[in-house]
Length: 361
Image: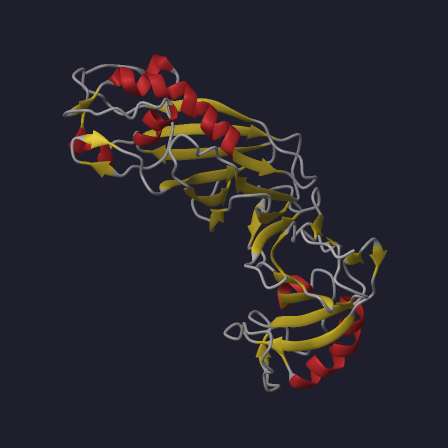
């Protein structure tokens, strides 16, 4: 057996195996645990070898076995792949720096790993992210460079605080909008308590038309309440009378949030549609009959309409609803009946600008 622990590498991914050769797989799965301490976060990731080979572009044909040297070649490249791609941010939005602290290498035959055994082979990689002190929240996202493998990464982490063996499993999304977990450090005799976050996302669509610009928002009640509270007798239930009582203040708030400029002029909106909806009703255009709703699944729907003098030449939407629990939003843009374009708003990129490709004189 060949001992290659001193090579100081190995990382992570998942594989799809074609007979007698390695090929580009359609999806790469990455799973592991994240243990949260007061001064660091420790990731432990168990991975199959195919992504190692793709990181070093070792995708040539293998007749029956993969040589240890081929895995060694991909080790350093894949180390960088993970450190660059896994993003953890503290409560101030600062990215934590990761460092590989340990690699557990499975036994590898001198003659190489049989292709039939690749699926059962795993490398366990330990990455440590230092923190200056306890953080009130942590955000997890992925920004992997998948240009070599051509495979998107689906990543999940099991979160647990130091000293415990269980915790919630969270998805790690791509882009700029992280999955966020709040941490309670009030009890100094214990490690952090992981609180069930993330909040459900807000659905937003921007419609740019000849006669007006419309912003449609469908927001989970629990997300909305990070900005505006809705008094209710029972925390888990939203009664019809409570919906009616809160409507006026919510309508005023909705017309004040965000900022829309049309041809350089800030335009105030008119609230042309407002309703409360259950989780199974996502059609903002239809009117739901008022009924008692679950606070956990209620969504507030609104359409804000901005009038235009003529066909707009330029539209700017600045999203302002960010806080520690809601760190970003995804949206769809529909302009002149064209197919929707996906965009993202974040505290660092809060504004989307649309320029009319065919402006009128």
